[in-house]
Amino acid sequence: MTTTTETMQPNQNRDEANHIRIFDTTLRDGEQSPGCSMNLEEKLRVASALEAMGVDIIEAGFPIASNGDFEAVSEIARTVKNSTVAGLARANKKDIDRAWEALKHAARPRIHSFISTSPLHMEYKLQMEPDAVHDRMVETVSYARNLCDDVEWSPEDGTRTEHDFLCRCVESAIKAGAGTINIPDTVGYTTPEEFHELISMLMNRVPNIDKAIISVHCHNDLGLAVANSLAAIRAGARQVECTINGIGERAGNAALEEIVMALKVRGDIMPYYTNVVTEQITPTSHLISTITGFSVQPNKAIVGANAFAHESGIHQDGMLKHAGTYEIMTPESVGLNKSTLVMGKHSGRHAFKAKLAELGYELGDNEMQDAFVRFKDLADKKKDVYDEDIIALVDDQMMRANDRIQFVSLQVIAGSKGPQSAELELTIDGELKSTKSTGDGPVDATFNAIKSLFPHEVKLQLYQVHAVTEGTDAQAQVTVRLEEDGKTVNGQGADTDTLVASAKAYIHALNKLLVKREKSAPAALSA
Ligand code: KIV
Ligand code: ZN
Image (cartoon, rainbow, N blue to C red; front, side):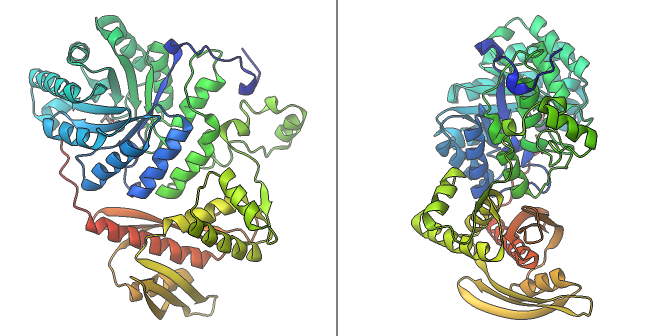
């Protein structure tokens, strides 16, 4: 057994046979879970972060599901150059045509088609006999393969499928042209031993299995998604499907960061490698939690706020003597750097521009000017300005560039002697409007003022405040989730004043809802 930290591990054997392809489905399986929906601009930002992180395949969406999904997959397909871009399709020609229409401009397109194969799903969901399911799969995989060289096929509910039928379908799918066969644990039911046996069984029994890459797609209903994925790798799987922060339907999907770091840290017993630039893990995790409003639990492996915190005296003492005593990987290896003090109010435009470039932002002249003015404003209010502050500031600015409703000013009376009131100024389609409202507390008064200037009926599903850095002068980052007719949107706002950040977050969500209203309703998705 090794006691060294991951940075001291010998390089894993980078033989292609040991390459584990990372298939990220944050934008499809993750985005499809309640409350996680993203707009086009957000999806493009996520796709570019995934590409920069070295993800092999980005599943960008389900093009037939809605016009918004179609548009997002096409835009991502046009933009991403280094990762394969996949689109999901059910086993019918209409879905496959729509997926191909969205994907055809990609440098590396992949059609991912699926149909259920378990007795329960075939009988109740599809109401089809196994032979009909098999034949439909062969017909549609061949159809997809005629359009696109790279086709993946998934037997949905694979872990509850009868073995003989699964082997028959996998063999036929490979013959029909699928280069990747993905075995989903759709309901998060399997266990590591059982899944290892299932994948080994396929490797041993399917005669043409060597003509395809075996992939796995694990859900986390029993908290076993990562363990099941690793067990499958040991049995021969060479692609894993996962999401950032483990977001996804119900209890989520296998977490990308956990799989990647488990393989990296335990290269001694799992001699495999991925192409992921692990230093990009923390920034990408932050991006997803900011956009979705799904904060990461503090004790979450790899990306939780406490994942590298050492509180007890014994641990701190050990850490001072040798970091390896209580750390099996370095914080830097997952991109967690100590907050760096960047600048204060005397910092000039040149230094600010250089800092933005270092943080990965490329702004046009006007945007840069706006950002600099906002930075100076922030530096006036806040003694120390950190990288995190700059990121929150620029993200805040970029998010609302095209919004119909724009925040102008807010004056609030708060405290124990009510009524609390808010005086608000907004521009709506360029026209300045102002009002004064009261409420049960300053946040309620602020939101009432927005409702009075722009009347609407929505349900507030989430109101969440985070401090961007430490200290009482820290910027507040607020997330607001609104729901209208079953559609949810998340809005974000950042400011040193929590109430201003709250107003901005609510207005941001409202603007997103307006865009969503204009887009057509999703098609019925019964598979
Ligand atoms: O969980 C599942 O079965 C899926 C398939 C579409 C791969 O997401
Ligand atoms: Zn899934």
